[in-house]
Image (cartoon, rainbow, N blue to C red; front, side, top):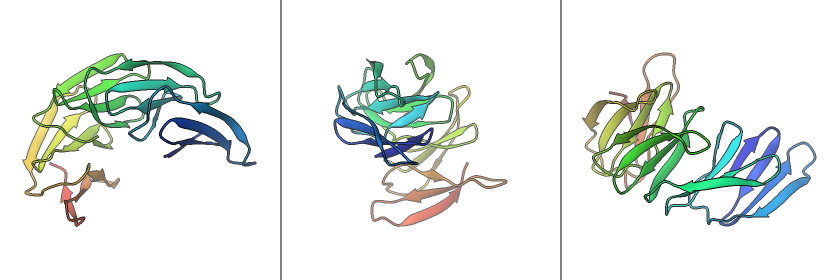
Length: 185
């Protein structure tokens, strides 16, 4: 997985992280990680957050590669993403969406009906697509579930939100790989 922070490419493999300067291609640092990374890394508030599916999150300084702590969310992690301000984590037992700071402080927690991958984010809304095909809309400022709809799909993976000037179309992928575009509820 690769993330870009301040003209540096952060390359993350299972248990190794390294930073490469984009301008010169020079390695800035290389570190062995204390956890095995199962999910894509996320940058929140200038901190690189690495997630292990078992529920461990690790904070890393992207400038130096120094580990700045970590915490356990108390459940298996189904997905991680960010709305630009908070880390959004979906958990498995119980199914929940958590909004966390880069230090692990919980802003809010929303109970879900089923395990969902990470939400697609568009503006102040998060869109979750569960295994049953249920689409759920969450207000990212409060954690309140605002709407749900049955898509009739056997989904594969999270939805993707398309940025437009008005309504938010969502691209959903089913188990066969076919894509469907729907208007957000």
